[in-house]
Amino acid sequence: MRMPSVRTSAFILIGTAWLAGLGSAPDCRADPAPQVLEDLVVTGERSGPGMWHVHRGAAQLWVLGSLSPLPKGITWRSKQVEQVLDGTKQVLVPKPLEIGIVRILWLLITERELLMVRGGKRLKDVLPANLHARFAQQRAKFTNDPDKWERFRPIIATAFLQQAAFHQVGLSARLDLGAAVRALAKKHRVRVEEIKIAGVGDVLEALKTMQPATENTCVEASLVTIESGLPRLIDRAQAWATGNVERIENLPEPAEVDACLAALDSGAAAGDLIARVRRTWLDSMVKALQSGGVTMAVVNIDLLLGHGGLIEELRSLGYEVEAP
Image 1 (cartoon, one colour):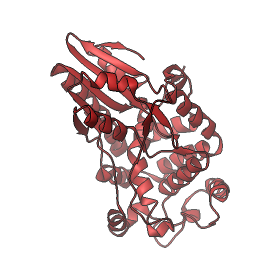
Image 2 (cartoon, rainbow, N blue to C red; image 1 turned 30 degrees about the vertical axis):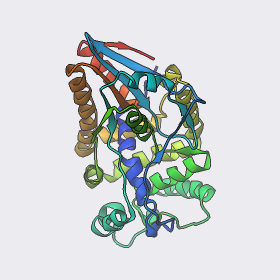
Image 3 (cartoon, rainbow, N blue to C red; image 1 turned 90 degrees about the horizontal axis):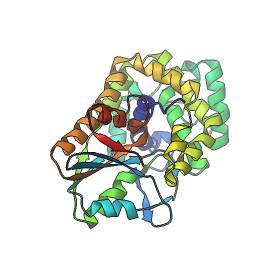
Image 4 (cartoon, rainbow, N blue to C red; image 1 turned 45 degrees about the vertical axis):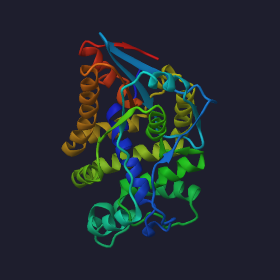
């Protein structure tokens, strides 16, 4: 059984909110309002994801796995989380990647060579003909503008197209489980510590060193997701909403996504960024466990699962881990 691709998912996670923000720039002819992550509605209608219980001695860590994308307007039951919060001393959540219109415009001016196609060319001039034909075919399904995103470099243009595809099928990559848990922590008067996993500068640095071949490989992975992978993402989202972790584990990545992973691994900047995300989370969770008491953490589920995932790492350090 192939487990979720931890590093690929992490790389997509880091850039999603940032790219979504760029998608609102005037150059994209979209709504110029500042973009922030959307909050998840917390009610009692869905069972929601289960939590991993990590412990050794008196130290306890409850880990809630987040997922992206999720169905827009999804509601999530908070009962179990609130029960844990009643005895929790702190909550660890990822620091949100929020980007407003002023920052977007500044990036489009100062980092234009990283974000846009260079030399007055367009997307059709730099993408292999077969990939651009597939891009154009999918673009026609989700927008009436035949030139939409033609001025952006391939990986960013395809990210915008993927976001449009998500919207069409009722998915969102911008729902923020961390915001929902922050609100619950505030209600229970629990201290919240934001973990900075990456910033805009980290994403820009990865883009600087990304080779065209790597970019094209990851463009193909996104196109496969748009063309045939949306039902899998919907299935994953539904499994998450009902707490079916086993179902998530049994939904393999397409081969093209694995190829993107291999290409990213060959690039020092991208690989280092993803490794730092995993190391930051592991260090933060171990620190919380060593300090004693009860801590809750909200971590992307693809960082937790599979070979080399954070759950396996915690077990290797001698912590007892009870699965949901």
